[in-house]
Image (cartoon, rainbow, N blue to C red; front, top):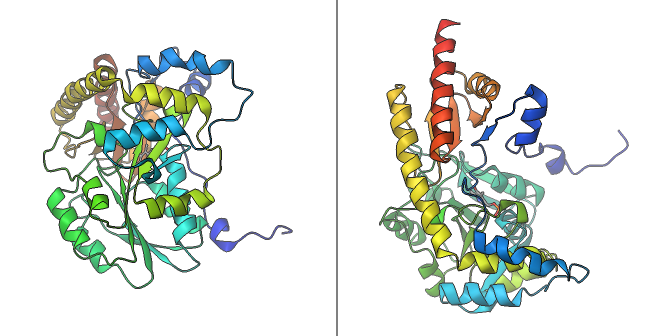
Length: 363
Ligand SMILES: *Cc1c(COP(=O)(O)O)cnc(C)c1O
């Protein structure tokens, strides 16, 4: 052992992403592979974004605009805040890291659900903080237990809304209750990666809390409904003070020039967003009904994926589904997360799952 590794880093394992389509095609020699593992938009990128990408090509020898002037202005206009309140990230993932590095000293605490986006835990550990995990209640964030977990050492509270991997939502009322109990030294992080898919009228207007002067940051992304996951661009809306602090640790060119240009175009593509929502809603009904027809009980989801107990080892089901050319996500135990696809993809998924579950019974 010659390397001296910080014990917090040694204790981490690398993030395991959804299996890439090409990898499965290579491994199993399959021609058709359907990936419903990473909550990507099955319709593809916003066409408006695709149309402008070539514009950037001729100036790729230049560094991006480190201040991302145009995109930040457009986002500020959209959310009725000032551009000093917008921070961009190489995906909103990166902003989670900036938050941990900015606010956590060794031993400081970050409160999060025990069953949520795994990056929170990773980034808190990597910043030498302490992750305080609070069990979900009926697959939902338990805001009362989260409030009780806050101490003098708490610096961050992560609220994934809708929650990944469960798809469940915390209501405006619950958020108001929670914020009534969060002391001012704590930054509340609303990770709203699936915001544009939400249909419930009880979903909180989390940005209103920023306008109230609360220490809140709302994270959104171009990776999900806008269909630009491969470009890596997300953003945070927060107070000018918090944005200024995060900008001190932000790598200066973290939002690349193609991503900035494409995101700007995608932001105005209301048609693509509306179509994506409609396809998701129809697909959600198709998949939820199909799962129920198989005797399963999918958890109600406000996002573009659904979480379900498949009644047997989820790893077995995941592997068996791969042999049918369908990539889903095994989260833990008997739980599988499946992204809503287009109608034909959903049909193939349901047919494959029916076979896998039937075989599982015989074998
Ligand atoms: C997909 C996702 C993100 C966004 O990731 P990007 O880095 O913007 O691609 C953030 N939070 C959650 C909970 C997600 O599921």
